[in-house]
Image 1 (tube, rainbow, N blue to C red):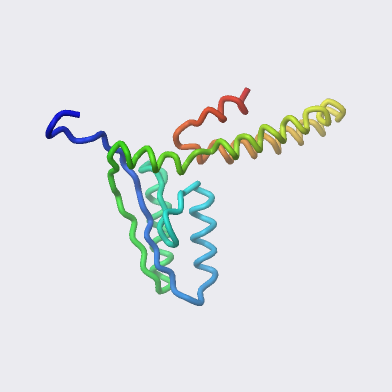
Image 2: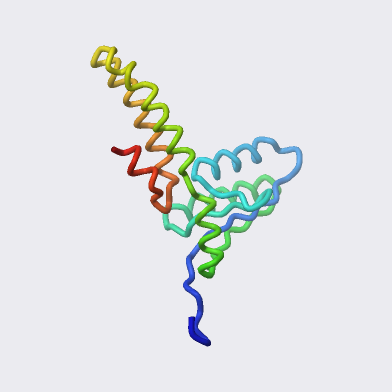
Length: 150
């Protein structure tokens, strides 16, 4: 990097939420929602996602729900330099989740061969859903995705 040159930057969205005590329903809603989207938890009440258009509106809706319940919430748009970006991207590594799906596929392969076609399709559909759930939050295309897809 030359003098005066800025490091490469990536865009991120951060949900910062302080939830009212005693309202377990809102806490559970926030937890389930950010978990289903594969958000990284930076600390209690601070959730990180890559800045993608399909993620901004749901986080804004979630922030509004927290505020409606008496808490405070903000959806922040930020940029990271190359070092921070690499650290944050590492929080989204889905290798372990893909390895679990692959292990299930391998464990069930022998069983699937013994099942009727209808039963095998049902079992296979379950594995496909597990794979799709992991892939939906694999924002940076890890190597595990290709291995399981094959």
